[in-house]
Image (tube, rainbow, N blue to C red; front, side, top):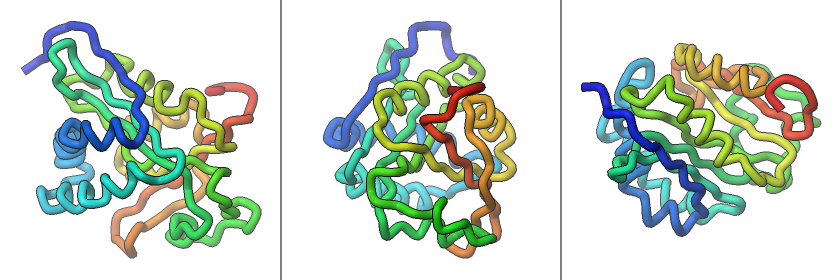
Length: 191
């Protein structure tokens, strides 16, 4: 089924607003990440959304939600400041230099989840979500993991100025992720 053409709105949200819209975020997450290369199960989705309420209370939490004119959620993105005691850097397969991994709770915004439902891809919604989410961010940089088989996502991130800084295997998993960083003070392509 091809969705009808129509207006897609993208709304910026703080933590309390995103918590109130948790069902919409969950619907997008479940649809996007149930498909290859992620193949998440309903139990995986439940686990992810057991963390969502706590994530929305984190410092600098922000989100963006894309919806059709009828209110159907079609895309989402969210994240928060990376805390000083993060394990993110410990999951890299090769150690990162101390200067890169230094966190103080204000230096880095962690883009935790990002996705657009398949029928709405290729319409610029991902870029609008990213721009809405990152507008006004006061951190120096944005950090994310992207599944190594998610070639369209990796390509989009690169076109927006992200660079690969390493590989991660979260939770000692077998699946590899590229760790990507966007310097918000960088000049040139993508910024």
